[in-house]
Length: 291
Image (cartoon, rainbow, N blue to C red; front, side, top):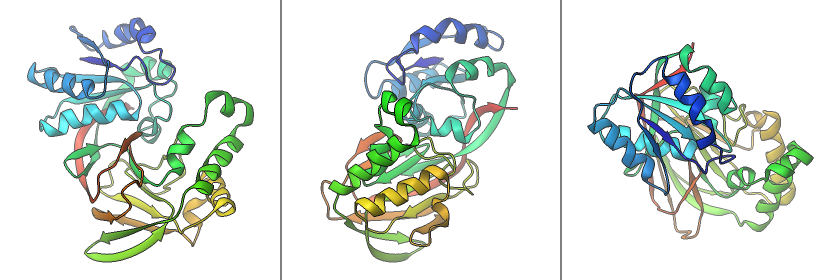
């Protein structure tokens, strides 16, 4: 089954169909194509693919679309193979797995792939494939316009992230890691399965898609100038060297807060449910990756 989110990224998923079918025909005799129209469609299509005993699912879209497919796979306890054709704005999963960008290059590489088992994260009753961010800077960075990135480059990320931090007040959370509970005042928490966050490949230097760990950064509270410094360090790949940031590696974490409006970003989608029970599911997903 080929699942296409036609509105992801440059909204050109449907235009890629002839090239995708040509590449997939080197491996498959029968290909069913489904287009998403609303949130939840990709998970429903995945469930149907599993029910119909499809061998593989290929997903054309961003990390949010991939997350839906992964939820369909894991919730149905399936070993179906997943192919990723990255066509979103950020594409952190593809970057981590070294799947070529843009989508056209990934399509050309379809015949040159093999199966790799990777980890999946669980947050409460759902699953995620890339990251959870609490606070607004990752969302602000993702929302930088294409025109701004073209004109200003890395500076556009710095300005947008710092602008958001200027408006955001620090928040208090209770974090339990390895049975140790801490109450922390922070401006940003980022938890990832991969090294790439918001398309920045050097966020978590040591993280790997199959290492069996959740990787977590807890930032101190900051305002405009401090936010600008942190965002710039993220951009240049030196954020993990900052001693003001708490860096954790764990298999399970619980996060609680009394801040009802605190934004949560899960694989690019907004969530608003606390407390968060987050754990790692090692090597449960079979993904096509380049040789």
